[in-house]
Image (cartoon, rainbow, N blue to C red):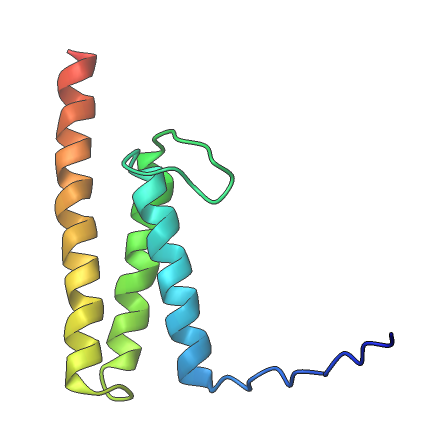
Length: 100
């Protein structure tokens, strides 16, 4: 029996799709560096300076995207950043208390 394997065409992503993919990847890493989830390697540790860098980058990306995405998507991305910022402050305060 001979099996013919169909070649599946890889969908072509728009620039906006790639940027959203990048945004979500960085957001996931931010959650991991806040020490709240495991990263893509299964590791769980906190590095607040890396988390802050990622949050700042996401914030910058959102400022550029405001004119290029619909309001619903913009609000969703804005919510992700707001949650990251709130959790950053919470984790930062916890780390300060632990050092005292």
